[in-house]
Amino acid sequence: MRRLPLLVCLTLPLAVQAEQPAPEQPPAAAVEPIDSASADARGDLERRLAESEQQRQALAAQLAAQSADRDNRRDEAVIGRLRQENQRLKLQLREAQSQQPPRLLSEQQTWYVTGGGTALLAFALGALSRGSRRRQRREWIN
Image 1 (cartoon, helix red, strand yellow):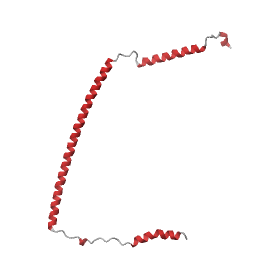
Image 2 (tube, rainbow, N blue to C red):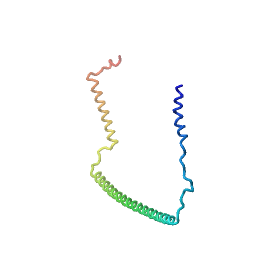
Image 3 (cartoon, rainbow, N blue to C red):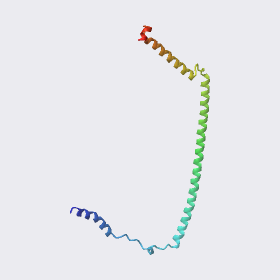
Image 4 (cartoon, one colour):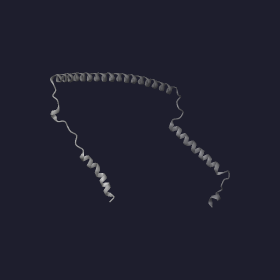
């Protein structure tokens, strides 16, 4: 029994929509004929529109060419400055490298010396941790 009011509420909007009349469309014969003066004016306006459209396209192309040329010149100037700075930095690097004294040890020799120092330190610590007392031979036999 409770479902009946729910179904009525759901179908009510559909019934209201079905009763609305469709909007009327004007008949095709209702369009007024165009007289010759307005046709001439329309033709003149279309011709002028085509001319102005061509002029707009030409100006747009010219503007694009100018902006591209301006961008190219700006990019070339930036590239030139960066090349000059790169040359200057390379020269500074060469000067700095020539002024440094040669290294005493190469990187491989440095690692070798570090490993040897570590081994000597481990040997010395092992000898010190053994203690001052010497073990005798019989202590080892047990």
